[in-house]
Amino acid sequence: MVRRRLLLLVFLTTICVAAVSVGADAQQDLRAKAEQGFALSQFDLGMKYYNGEGVAQDFAEAATWIRKAAEQGNAEAQNALGILYVSGKGVPNDYTEGMRWFRKAAEQNLASAQYNLGQMFYEGQGIPPDLAEAYRWYEKAAALGYADAANNLGYMHEKGIGVPQDATKAIIYYLPLAEQGHRAAQSNLGFMYMAGEGIPVDTEEALRWFRLAAAQGEPLSQYNLGNMYLQGLGVAQDFSTASQWYRKAAEQGLASAQFNLGNMYWKGDGVRQDHVEAMAWFLKAAAQGEANAQNNIGVMYGRGDGVSKDNVEAARWHRLAAEQGDAIAQYSLGLMCARGEGVPQSYIDSYKWLYLSASQGNELAQKALEALPGLMTPEMVAEAQGIARSWRPSAEKPKPLPEKR
Image (tube, rainbow, N blue to C red; front, side):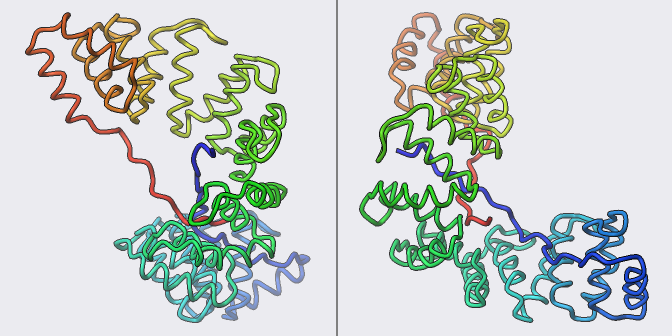
């Protein structure tokens, strides 16, 4: 099975109206027209400053000229100014002001602004989240042919976010986009066939859509292809090919792929075993909060795999993963607390971590937990149980987001 689905979101459409490259005379003419108050010239000049085309890149100057055009009602400039406020480029970061400019452009039927406004309502940036409003603005943008908005509508139906869960409606949105080459829709469609979300599992269809999306550089599809080759789902099991797909996704920064590629180097599956390379990939994934990678780094420090053995570092990495709720890391940290390895010895802390791990079904943690009360007073056990029961993960996992590419 696919280990998990990670939906990475580029929150807003970037300013994509490129200023036309011109010579020095034309540049002077453009500035003259902008200074005379021509909105299109003001916007074009602002874009030149934004992109650094013919002038030194200067976001503040870009914002100045884009604002002039926006205040004259130019919808593209209004949308661009909204993006500047949301990103904090050239102006103070201000979601409320960004949303105000998106709305102005959206009300002029600019599809990209309608999409961005939908994103603001979905995320609750500058306003309370409102999935119904998000859906409404996505629907307006989709009706104008904005593919990313249609993809997000499909995702909301697929997952039942703000609307009843309906796989058929999700496919109605995904399939035309996928057939037109929209890589995120291809990836989403592939996942539905892979996981059997509302439709029968069909690994051949999943493979087909993942391959099409992966060929366009879509990292989730590259990652899922790696999983399918690793596990022999719909294809002959092939660790070497799996590692190649993981690498493609890992090099794009996908933490799950970085973790899996690190595992392959650690074990020597499909690649030459290399603990130093494994550690490098685990560190990349861990820096993004990947708990499995943090735990494995702890194991490597505890064993001295690719690094000098260091129980203090081992405990530190296990703790990072344990605080996120990783049961294996909680078990390892519990044992280290009991033994005083890398941390001060504490049976109370040990009980806490073993209790949390056992509560997730870890049988080894349960066995270790049963041995601890013989080393503790009843008061210590009661204190440890109270601490464990009141414990909460350090950070909640983000809710699934509509995909934007």
